[in-house]
Image (cartoon, rainbow, N blue to C red):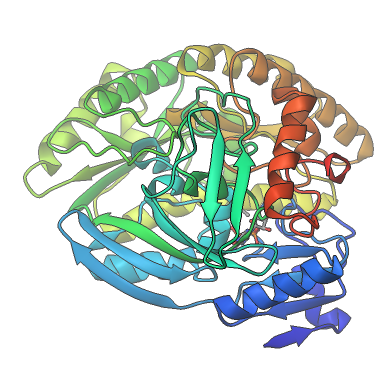
Amino acid sequence: MLIKSQPDEIQDYLSDASYMHGGHADRVALPENAEQVAEILGEATRTRTPVTISGAGTGTVAGRVPFGGIVLATDKLDRIKSIVRDNAGGRAIVEAGVRLIDLQRTVESEGLMYPPDPTERNCFLGGNVATNASGARTFKYGPTRNYVKRLKIALPNGELVDLRRGELHAAAAGQITLALSSGRVIHAQLPSYQMPRVRKHASGYFVAPGMDVIDLFIGSEGTLGVIVEIELRLLPKPEGLLSGVVFFDSEESLLAFVREARKRSLADRLSNTDRGSSAPVSEGSALDARALEYFDVESLRFLRQKYETIPTKAIGAIFFEQETTGSTEDSLMNDWLGLLEHHRALADESWFATNEADQAKLREFRHALPVLMNEWFARYRQRKVSTDMAVPDEAFADMLRFYQDALRGGDLRYTIFGHIGDNHVHVNILPRNDDESAKAWEIYLKFIRRAVEVGGTISAEHGIGKLKREYLEELYSEEHLREMASLKRVFDPAGILGRGNVFSEAFL
Ligand SMILES: Cc1cc2nc3c(=O)[nH]c(=O)nc-3n(C[C@H](O)[C@H](O)[C@H](O)COP(=O)(O)OP(=O)(O)OC[C@H]3O[C@@H](n4cnc5c(N)ncnc54)[C@H](O)[C@@H]3O)c2cc1C
């Protein structure tokens, strides 16, 4: 097993896309199989050495940034072990360090699709499961959780456990009994909070009455065990795709367009809430967006640096994707054009794509904004001030207005963009110096409080990590945080794993 300890060799493992400073570790271990992972953890528990798990480091909340101890890097767990077809699509068995983009390309070449699509596709699948990542297609297909059938997990004491969806559930009152192959039995109690009723949620441990125990590990941000191997559900690849970036010169029209596209898309579907259920699939010829993404006027101002053809009178845009077949493509195109016309979009100046090359260009446009934002944060060496809240359906319009009222006409630069179909837009405030940063964080706290007040979540997809743990106290009570810490202690008695992620070490 490769161990790195020279400062220049380990530098890349000390930060992530949060740009949090000060990360340090004694060494980085790169295990090549599950047994080596278990061995590292067993030894770390015996010596009480902190272990931070590293995926690809694309996380934005400093989850993989270590503060002492060792980094357990999953880079060498990079095998796609098998892809098998079945009647519903198929399944893939992958190690934790497989890059999402590699899996997506491989399954697509076999006529299959792995739906979760966090914008940054260089992330590892282990990181995706650890953060329950989601993205634009989550509007139709739900988050990573919905595709995880089995996990092989190395627990902090060095034991390996296989959890298959459907095989082990918590009792109605929240007790978990997990028998390990060593004969040891783990008894744990789930925290007593109720998760917010939103379509996406990645804040703290997943908890639901009678839940599948596998769901506890999904989204646990490297605090309960190392995900070593994952079995994923795959779907058939859609025959065709229609996508567009459509511009509007009136916000009222844009929001009315979203409301109607959303309502018609959701009409046929089963519930798509993030409750560990299987993903909904609606088929046929009805208008059915798989992605509905928003760009406000400030986002367009930013993007004009790269895309000069954005219409000058546009005050906002929506990126949409709709799956098609040879027989539905024309009628669906007409449906979308009808909807755009009805809501007075700038249809002639909008961009549409029906082939893969053009679609890649539109996706590139969608992806350019978060990348430009991250470059800004790196350039000004300011901590990222980026919201990730989702709110219930009925609260979204007011929440968007609340964001705009707080920022419009002020000195701070900002953008509002993202997953409007899921009532989940990112507000990025772009401070240029420490004063602006202080103002931005004050505003951020107001946004967090308002989201909680209206029944929303403080992080819908990026997780809590180290950057947002103080804000988790706005969502859950101190008692709830203690319950989370007690649960962690059952799996990790020496408290070695992912220290400082999700809740402060003080709770341990
Ligand atoms: C430009 C940009 C856009 C993004 N857009 C999205 C988006 O649309 N949706 C979204 O959900 N996220 C998004 N992200 C965030 C990020 O891509 C996801 O959080 C991703 O899932 C992180 O994966 P990673 O492999 O990089 O994990 P890392 O950053 O390395 O780690 C993330 C966390 O998971 C833990 N972890 C990693 N691997 C394991 C493992 N094998 N077992 C247990 N714990 C582990 C780490 O300790 C850490 O706490 C974006 C990031 C960037 C930079």
